[in-house]
Length: 52
Image (cartoon, rainbow, N blue to C red):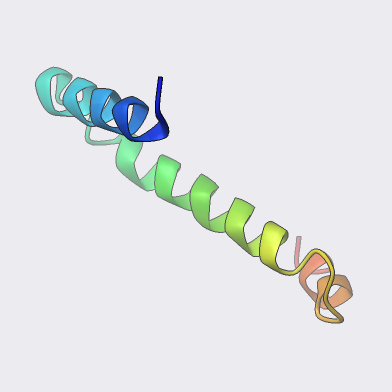
């Protein structure tokens, strides 16, 4: 099962079941995970971790 099919299936779920309130939660989780992943090996990491 490809990643694209999982995303499409999730999109269909949200569209048909009208679960639009999940969108901001998912976006925040993706943004935080990208922030942690991108700053993992950089010199900025200690400053970002102190924010949380």
